[in-house]
Length: 135
Image (cartoon, rainbow, N blue to C red; front, top):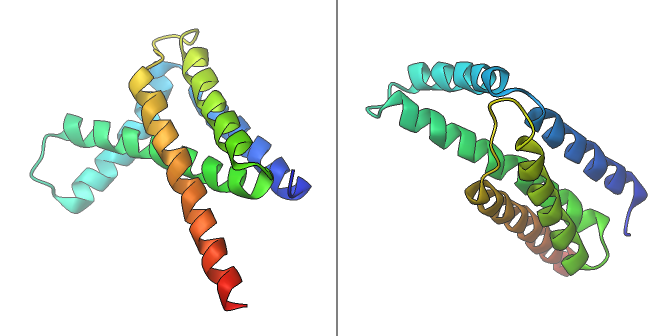
């Protein structure tokens, strides 16, 4: 483990992700739907609202897990453990949703989450490598 403080943020972020997953489908949909509708109205996009709303929800998955991947890059000394643990979190998150009213676990969401983890991890990796070369 590289940094205990960052690891604590990593755990807090997992709690944030899982707290969103514990919301019943109606609450989750109302929350993301109102945000999607505000963005949709602001941007005046020529696409169907449901398509836009799905896109926003998938971007939220990717973004939440990109942050998790970035925190993992700072938290774990072994990149395999950081990525593996984060992907396990994504799998548990989708499994958890199977037990929440109106929610369902999706393999596609695990794949989106995993892509976000890898993206966040490699962004941190490349930025830290870039700045360590300049020093």
